[in-house]
Image (cartoon, rainbow, N blue to C red; front, side, top):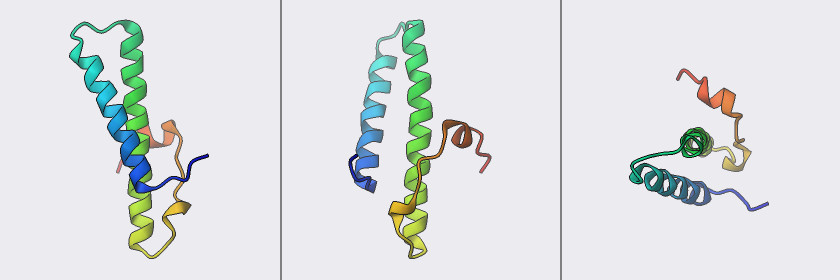
Length: 80
């Protein structure tokens, strides 16, 4: 498994955003593409959550590698 860094998370976010833009840019979206867009949205939320965790750990002098990818259910139900 590749070592996760802020940069690898950001690159993954960029890839997902590009895919999302491509799908929306098509105009008409199939049911399968709508499902994929939903998956992209959840994955983006999970990536942003991981990045926030890494930054918070670093800010408080802890190892950012201790951050964990949280489940979609946890991230999607987060109330802030």
